[in-house]
Image (cartoon, rainbow, N blue to C red; front, side, top):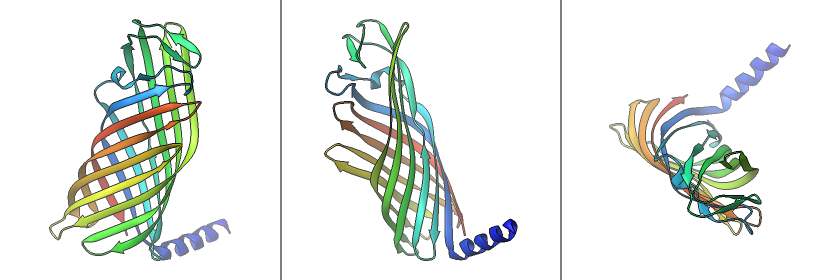
Length: 242
């Protein structure tokens, strides 16, 4: 009975499906600035970015599904974790604990992103496509400082609504350029994730890309002040399922 029901659901789902896409993005990420103050009203403002290595390896995975109605969804997993050591020339008050100046502090910063997007295929032509929609982002963040036996951290998990846009221009010879965007600004803060890329269709279903992605934004309230920018330089492979 269960097998019959599963087959029935699969047949209905397959009949509604136009295309699905799996995308893998690999590259390096650099942190331009990472200004932090915790708590936001009483902590010490400092820049965590100089404590990290110049570049770090990262990956990013997404799956998109489009239906015959031109509606569709996207699922995305984008982990991010940086850590390092730095000697700061001033005392840092963080989570009600004071970290000494002129002594090494180990830092850790994580900003993992889990996203689900709804989109509508507004334009679907041979050479140009455009998707517009909305994204619900689950933000899983961590800021940690450690000096000798003193360790303090701040974890934060929350939901962030974003605007979603994806566009592609493709030539007959297989060359493509594309734009990918999630973002929104509000009085409480902002979040922008934008990528520009170009590549080539090796086959009608398989293409590769090289690109640049910028993740920028932050929040300013009594509990947390944090504004940062990350620069991603990546290569990506995408396979389309019909």
